[in-house]
Image 1 (tube, rainbow, N blue to C red):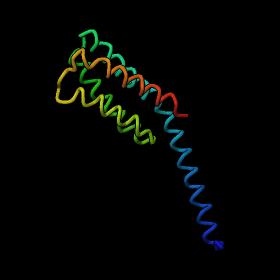
Image 2 (tube, rainbow, N blue to C red; image 1 turned 60 degrees about the horizontal axis):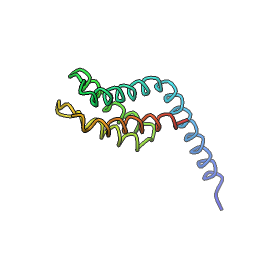
Image 3 (spheres, helix red, strand yellow; image 1 turned 180 degrees about the vertical axis):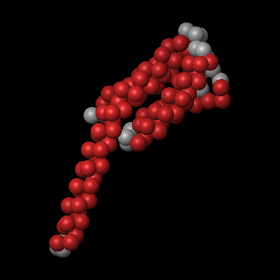
Image 4 (tube, rainbow, N blue to C red; image 1 turned 90 degrees about the vertical axis):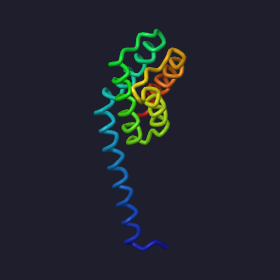
Length: 121
């Protein structure tokens, strides 16, 4: 049988978890436009990669956006999104420009990221 102190601790822990979840939800709503913008930047980079029109500036921007998404999505407990963003980031690591053969996978990653972001409530 639980003591009164243990029951109070459990109730306090649940309240803290609820407060934390509410704070994360608030932050999600606040940063969602920026997160979506980064995903769209990745989609645009994938499309330009397919057309062999990817500029150095786009490569750098896509690399930075993917890196930021990897961290941000992890913060919001979207581990699958973190892994996908890291995969995208690696395609642009070292200053290399992905070739058109990579474009299909990059577009797929961007679409999966969009779905993950849109599925979080």
